[in-house]
Image 1 (spheres, rainbow, N blue to C red):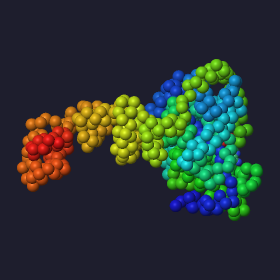
Image 2 (cartoon, rainbow, N blue to C red):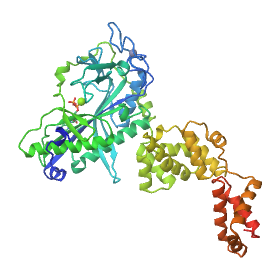
Image 3 (cartoon, protein in one colour):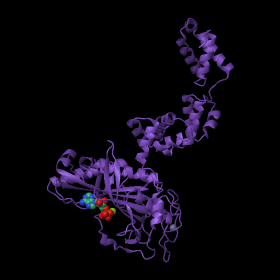
Image 4 (cartoon, rainbow, N blue to C red):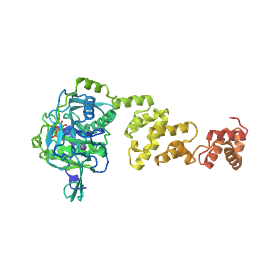
Length: 504
Ligand code: ADP
Ligand code: MG
Ligand code: ZN
């Protein structure tokens, strides 16, 4: 354990006995628009550094921003999905600061005039209940460039010898969603923080406005935590933990801050209002002390017109809102006739949409669930990727299931076909042919294998002849083994029965 990790922590139960936590979540989400917020540069993750840049997003003198309408549309849809009011008129603001990730030396953001205000999200919890989280605002802004610091152990700027800048991300449309203070969560605060971010991620994904990948930074979360003695109305001093980059980490960071702050308060100290960094091994450490709003010298952005969405447009967009993902899940669970546990496993595995898309290709929900929920989950774990990142599509899984249904593949052979698809060997039918996996139905070949098995097991043959038809299973098994599972088992059984003078 590092020094920071061993900071004084109070036992969680003791924290809860004496204090009430107040949370505030700030989530940044990159929109998956084709182009950036104020210029025509491509908005794509993972390209060669500094290949998606132009005078506008590089902040060259005289370049003027032009607002991306698709980004405003996404902002409005997000606001509506969060039950916010969409304001009739709002502006962008300049947030001034000098740092190399922002080549203009200011970020175009929204300050006191956000596009969406005063909403809420009913967050589903594990136990089936919901917890209402108030939404203070959702506003539009642009992302900054990405700095990579080399030469320091931590990857942070302290101690770095070189810093690299990639401006591909500068100007990517960003929506920041800020909650009202979350009170009354008590011992469930860490769980609620995580459940809120999970619900928000699922909602944004269902809206189709972002790919919401916390691991790639297209969804980033800061968690504010403060404690107050139970019964006190006034909030305590908060800390803001930055860039908590997985759902699990959201929970861990909140729990850690509650325990750390409580230890300070118990010792008669005061909590310092500051930004803290989350570390993957489960603790937070102090970062810079927070700039205040005055430091940023906000003023209305003079190069952009105000945004005044017509009520008609807002209502048109309201009509495009999808079914809430957790409501949809409940419906699918009923359609598929599965238990809460099975559904939870599918949700946790990220399999629900994949199963649903597979069923749309005309196969049974049972088979679709079995493939995604068992074999493919295992494959994803083995290669350390998300289920939906596996190189196999719902259409391909459905094709494999159909080959099984048609008796061309046994389940065992089907797994080899899927492995071939995952290895890039082509479509399922092709893999089956190339690998020679198709079930053998040719009677001549099967008869030879059956005769061999019968000859090797005269005692069993005697039993079958004597009427013990269940003994045929052993012969069928021997044939399947000899043909490496490629024989058509039903046909083999028929041949065995016929050879032993039995009809069924
Ligand atoms: P900043 O720009 O300082 O990060 P924001 O208003 O963007 O401030 O976000 C602060 C977040 O913290 C909001 O979600 C807000 O509801 C929440 N918050 C405010 N005061 C407290 C407090 N005392 N304890 C916990 N959360 C708080
Ligand atoms: Mg903030
Ligand atoms: Zn550009």
